Amino acid sequence: EISGNEVMPAQPEPITSPTPGAPENVSAAKNYIVEIIDNEFRPSVVKVKKGDSVTWINKLAVLSWPASAMHPTHAVYPETGGCIASKFDACRGLKTGESWTFIFNQTGTWKYHDHLNAPIVKPGTIEVSE
Image (cartoon, rainbow, N blue to C red; front, side):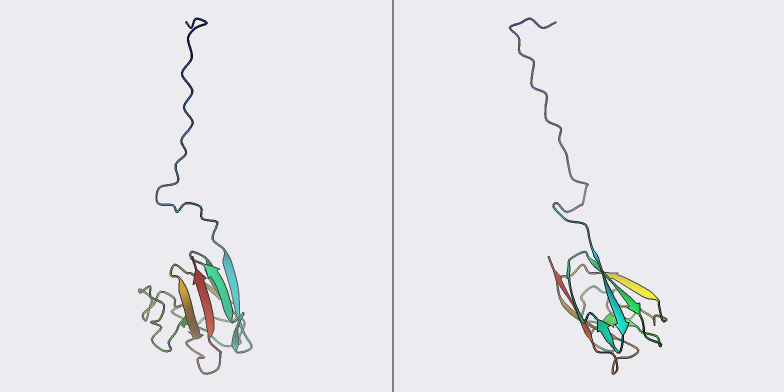
């Protein structure tokens, strides 16, 4: 029982902690669309933030294989583990209307090409910032 002279201890503020392993103050990742059409990647330059993804959609009448520069090694993007060298590699030709998505975890300017149509389809660029 509390008399009129006693003070109740202050209620502690609730503590909120971030999800373990989650970066603080990060907005939701976004996805950007690149169409493979008329012998080019459209848009040819895409600016994204680290953790964003890009989806390539093949609008050509032939198979298209988006992959990191340089042709044919695909080794410029630094994350290894793809079918040839880099993870930035669809690893197969996309049929007309088919898509492939890649999440960019490395900052920098990353050129890419169409592995199956390198001399015909103009290369593209993904610029990844923090």
